[in-house]
Structures are given as C-alpha cells and as structure tokens.
Length: 386
Image (cartoon, rainbow, N blue to C red; front, side, top):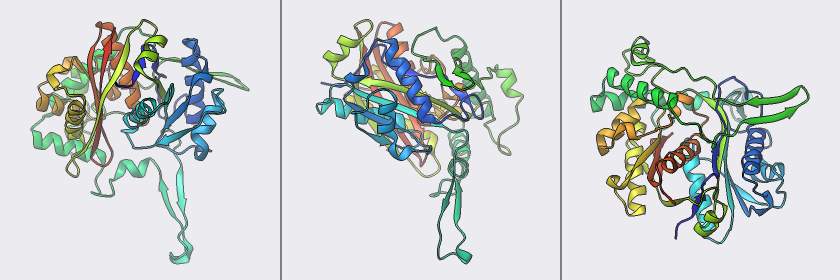
C-alpha cells in the first residue's frame, strides 16, 4: 500500500526573484512561516506531526540544527527529523524519505523544502599547508553554476550539448518557452499557494505573488540574444534563481482520506533516479521517469499529466521526443522555466501543481521528473483518486 498526500496538503509559497523580497530572510524563517500558514489553513494541529524531513541546498545560519529548529519554529518542539540535500533533486528525495517514514510506522510526516539563492554564502576552507596558510574560498552558488567538478563545464553548456546533438533548434526552444509562459498565464486560481507573511519590527514582510516573471511571446523570445556565443538558449529559455518554500504532509492512504479537503488523495506509486553521460544533464529526466514508472508498474501511456523541473527549454523538448508525450499536457500550471528556481523547493512546487491539475480533471496518474546537478535526474509517479 503506497503512502499518500491528502488533497489540500501539498503547497508552495510564491517564488521571489533573486535579490527580491526574501533576499534578507533566512530560508528557515520563510519555511516556518509558510508551513505554519499552510497547516493552519487546513485546521491541522501541528502536534499531530510525528516526523519531519527538511530539504535544502544552500546553507543558512544555524542550518546545522535545521530540522529541530524548524520543528520548534512551527510549534512542534518534540518532533525530530532529518535533512536531505541533493541539488535540484532535493524535493523528490525528501518526498521519498517522507514516504518511507510513513510506510515504516510514522503516522504524519511533514516534508518541507526551502532555499534562498539570494545572498548564498561564501565558504572559507582552511589550508594550513598552502602558501602562507591562505584559505580556499568558494561561493556556494555561483561556483556550482559555473562548473561541474567532474566535467569543468557549466550547466548551460549541458543544455547546449543536448540541443546540438538532438538537432533541436532555437525556434523549437522559443516555441516551447512561449507555451510554458502561456500555460502559466492561464493557470487556474487554486489554494495551494500560501503567501509568505513574516512579522518584523518594521511591519510584516509579505510575498503574495511570484516575482521576476516576465511573460513572453514567441516573437519577443526570438528577439533575445543567445546566452552563450552561437548558443541556442537565451535568458528567456532558461530559468532564473529564486527564493521560496514548499511542502507536503505524507501519511497512510486511510489517514490521508481522513484529512483530505474533498476525500481525494495523491498516492505515491513509485520513485526513480538516474545518472546520464557527463555533460548531458537535460537528458536525465527521461531515464529517471522510466525508472519511476517501472517502480509503479506503469508506462508512459498510463500517464495523464506530466510535470517537470526544466531549467532549460531543451529539457521538455527532449522529453517529448523520447517519450512521445504531448507537450501541452506537461506543466499545465507553468514551470520553473517561468517562475524561477530556488533549487530545494522547486520540485515540490511542481508536484503540488501536478496534484492540483489532476484534481481539477477528476483524478488520474501524474509523473513529475526533473534534472539535477551532476547529470542526474529524479522522478515520482502519483495517482490522484477520488
């Protein structure tokens, strides 16, 4: 019997642009505010939580105590938990951990994802044997963007490699990006988005809507310069860094139906991961998806809707070419290509949106898949049932 998420218990904050509203706020504080508000909205008493899984990728002050600090901040000081960090696959990893805990005897397991790409730290590593004892420094975020230590290449380079090798041209990437922009603009009004409200000495800091979204048509995208010399991607057809939080409550199916706002639940049927050839990160969602489908005993033909984390437009174009899945039935609420990428929470937002889209159509099977640093991918298959 699979673990499940009750309807109404998967949520996301709006995403703030890099350097925007949440730039000076610890991601742990954002997570605490959003999680409390999400649970309060459902009338859920936090003392029912048995276990916490915290997903993050960018260090914050006091992250050493992350799960216990977050539990205390939401009013659950006796709840323990663990931390998960797996680059852009962190959401799927945290959800898989929460599902395993729920199946292992925990009743209500809270998965919380949070990150702040703004003001990421510069790390200083001692080097006593270096010339003059000079330390090594590393900007946690920018150095990771610039080069994979296994290949020496940037993430943008991986997207360009795949586009060139698969024969995917600039026009196809712009068309895909314009479609995702249109889907975001037409998304229905739902209540899975939880505003950030953090009281302070100068009033309450509030983030009620996504920041940094610039909706573009195909013509507008075509006018942009390539992000790299002779490249196919532009700053329109790749995602942008962001800040935010997301989460879900995971439990047994019977308990999920008890908590559900309408009786429906999202059963977590299977998880999968993959690593592909060096420098080919955008291809990883395909084998990860196939692994998750195999674990669920399903095929792509059984899937009604797909959600992806696609930091580059090539991800979705490649996916549709490899699977034959209808690109219009993917990311029907938009995606990270449009609203940004805080890393840890990005996947959970996509999963929450996938659940809401399936609920709106009366149920069905959904697949979420995405790439991650190190030429990796991670995926989950779920089924929304009435």
